Each structure stands twice: as structure tokens, then as C-alpha cells.
Length: 283
Ligand code: AG3
Image 1 (cartoon, helix red, strand yellow):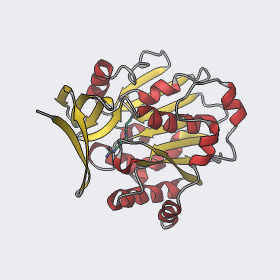
Image 2 (cartoon, rainbow, N blue to C red; image 1 turned 180 degrees about the vertical axis):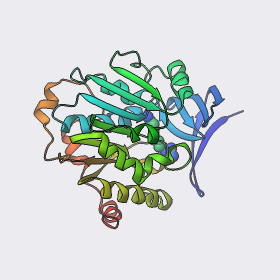
Image 3 (cartoon, rainbow, N blue to C red; image 1 turned 60 degrees about the vertical axis):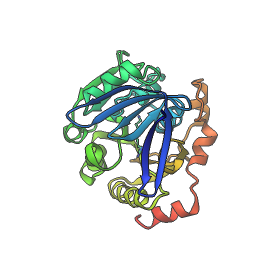
Image 4 (cartoon, protein in one colour; image 1 turned 90 degrees about the vertical axis):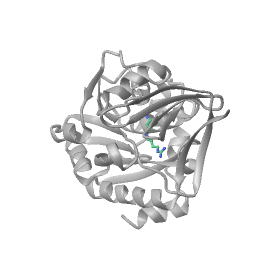
């Protein structure tokens, strides 16, 4: 008998991975959580049947969502992470000795518990003394924050279900208020490729453009997400993601990365024409 995990990328396209073993299945107040093991991608985490990360390709997503803002901000000391209960973003952030505080706001405590147990490659730095976890709805948490953070990283699920609120105008406005005058917000920005995803991507882009003076988009290829072509949003009060990138300074840190480098950083903001057009349509 063969066991396969399948996510519908569109009503007409299936993405499947052959599963060796299901390691965990459970339901929290918020969602269904599953962990599988596979030959091709190692262990992987799905929420409500949607792929969140695999051991094989998570480095691409976590490096790109973390190091891009960290290489632009000249002195990121206080960082807020929304979602990200698997620990991947926290793992990357704790590599910066200059970071003094990392607040992680995750709505679902069970995601953190399950990740600690089954995903040691990502959930490996929660015990760093700079990390503070708040089990709370990110939208509500943000309402109380003002002029507090240098960098905010929004590592959400897709814009429906539990993560829906993290794509609203209200939420982006709260993020703006929560940032210092030179703060940066980066978010996972969905895929431009399939029509339905592109429409959702445009909708959130429009809201971010309306909320921040500088709003750019960058890309990476992530094999296990719909179409494999993924976008991130870079929203900022002051710094431009490419002109204000201090490559020499970041390279002096000596962080060993597998995907991110400062040449790729600049290149990632050069987008295909069809993507530029989708973005322009809502700017
Ligand atoms: N968060 C983004 C997941 C989006 C994937 N969408 C999908 N498979 N339909 C990933 C969390 C990693 N820390």
C-alpha cells in the first residue's frame, strides 16, 4: 500500500508527496495539525492540509523572510515575529548577536509543542533567553503595540482560515504603528502564479501599499508551495530594500546561509514582467 499526502494547488492541480509514515495528527482549537515523514522531503508539517514546511526546503523560506530585513536595517535590536510556531524564523534570528529581544506571537500553542517534538531542525532555539512567546491572536496583540519594534516578520498561513486577519488593512496599520520611525515589516506574500493565488496576493499588496510609504516585493523559489514561485513583501518607513542594503556589513557577520546571499538579495527584487504588472495594477 502506498500512502501519499496531497495538497490541491488549484481545483485542477494536485501536489503530492509519497509518505513513509505519519508521525502526528491532532486538532487544536484552531486547526488540524499533521506531521509526516517522507523520503524526498524529510519530515513535513501541514496545517488544515496545507503545506507549511518540509525539512528539505524550509531553509529557503526562513532565510529569505529573515535575512532580507535584517541585512537592510542598520541596527535591529527588537524584533517581533507573528505566526511561525514551527520556530524556523526564530532559529535564523537568534544567529544575530546584536538582536536583544525576539517576541513571538503564535495563536496556537499546540503548533509550538508539536514542532518541538517532531521538528528539531526548526524548533531548536525557543530556549534562547531573548525569545518570548505570546500565545495570542496576532491581530489583537498588535493593537496594543506602539513605536516598539525595529523589524516585524509576518510568517502567516494563507489568507483564509486562522491566518485571514493577518492580511487585513487593520493589521498592517497596527504593524505600522508598532514599528519605530525606521522600522521594516516583511510578510509572506503568497504566489503570483495561479489565478486565485494571484488575486489574493494583489489584495494584500494593495493594503500594504496603502499602509506604508515604501512597499516592494521580492521572490524565491520554494518547491513545496503552490507553483514553487513565492513572494515576500518588504514594507518600510524609511529604508529601501536594495539601496539601503549594507552588503559589506552583513557579510562581515560571517553567517553561513544556504540560500540567501547579498547578491541574491538585490536580485530577488527584480521581478518577472507579469508579476510587476500584477503589482502595478493595485499600486
Ligand atoms: N507559512 C506560509 C505557508 C504558505 C503555504 N501555502 C500553501 N501551502 N498553500 C509557512 C510557515 C513556515 N514557517
